Amino acid sequence: MKGKFKAISLLLAIAMAASMFVACKNDKKTGSNGTSSQSGKREEVNLIWYHWGDTPKRPDGVIKELNKMSKEAIQTTVDFRFTSGDDQKLKTIMSTGGEFDIAFTCAWFANYVVAAQNNQLADITDKLQTVTPKLWEYIPENCWTGSRVKGKIYAVPTYKDSAATQYWQANKEYVIDGAKAEAEFKATSKALSTVTPLLEKVKKYHDESKKPYPHDLTAPLNYNWAGLNGHNNGWDTLGLDNLRLGIKIGSNSTKVQNMYEDTEYINDLKTLKYWYDNGLVNKGASEVEKDFEFKVIGTEQGWEGCEAEWAFGKDYSIVINKKYGPIYTTGSIQGAMNGISPNSKKIDRALEYLEYANLNKEYRNTLAYGVKGVNWKLNDQGQVESLTKDDWAPGAWAQTSIFELYPLKPAPADMYTNLKAVNDSAEASPLVGFIPNVDNLQTEIAACQAVVDKQYKYIQTGNVKDVDATIKQINTDLKTAGYDKIIAELQKQVDEFLKAK
Image (cartoon, rainbow, N blue to C red; front, side):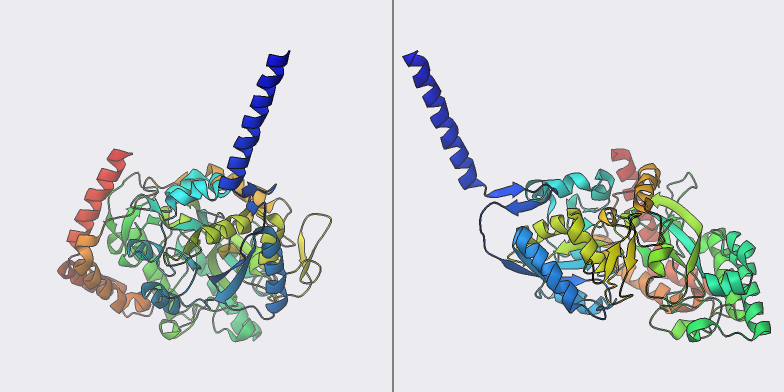
């Protein structure tokens, strides 16, 4: 008996020593919400986050509440700096080693791939599984795969409608109730020609009723020099969105093609010219810098139910009709991300904060909607009802995972559950995760980009005399600039990527 007592005492001593060692070695614990929190006191840190979008109208109260929550949970506060949709300042900060901890980046804003390749974002590949294992588990594998650049991860993808679906949208009161164009709206699809009858009916209503387009708009469809949102739907553009090349999804081919040689794409460009010539889109669109906040008819990436969010802060309701999708591409997965500065002295803490902001439901909804009971309330159906309109409207889609959000009324309470199911069953491009190595193509890419840029804002808004003649000139200039060399090298890399899968 005495010997057994000694053995038990020895085991207890070993266990106590081991637990003390572990406690000293790792003072972190995982909270019930899956985020890392500190078991003891630690230094408070403040992070600089270059956040997507315009500064909200009344941000102070919301930011104070957000910082109160994150300070209590993970001893972290955030200095929110809004980008106003202009990435030039952020690109300069990133390229010169300027001060920031977290920055919004993506395929089309502060170019994620370029920033990663130029060491302007921290490599977080290994840290994701050690510092933020719950975040690593939460975001699906294909989203991490689509975030890799040369095998490494440099930003946390926003887990949302990562399998992209494009929708046509319309001002319900003007288009459906006023112009009585519901049938024409429901007939819209991927081909732009299917939208022409809708635009013509709305214009006829405007002309005959003398009822002005709302918000001083000048046509049924209004856009800036970038042209129609989603104009490259149906193409995996291989991370080189503005070069007008890629593989055509759904064609059962992985051939890298020139989009200016594709019949369907050319027909869409001709439709854009018809719209421009016939007053169906705003004149002078090619010279308009900023996109329009309000729309009569438009198109955006979204999901069933997101029309409530699109209508937030507007004086009209929105109806939607699917244009294309859903489908995963590397570009759609990289549609919203947040990276960390390689020069930050708080990389781990910044990553912990992103885990907290992604997984903590209370914080996530405050980040999206503002202070509960002040800016919004939750009704009995599990929907958010706004109390202060757009006092805090930061662009929730760009922040962190949308799957911890309550939907905004009148969207159905199960909207995000349904969207997750759509993601889970969506088709994927065979090139998800493919990022081309263009180190040896920089001269040709720069030359070809100059060719595309010269005509881009005109041909994409329909403001050209002759589409065929313009395309012929573009293709001639592209060939001279080395386009064939780019396509041949990309094809080689695509074939190697697919062979290695």
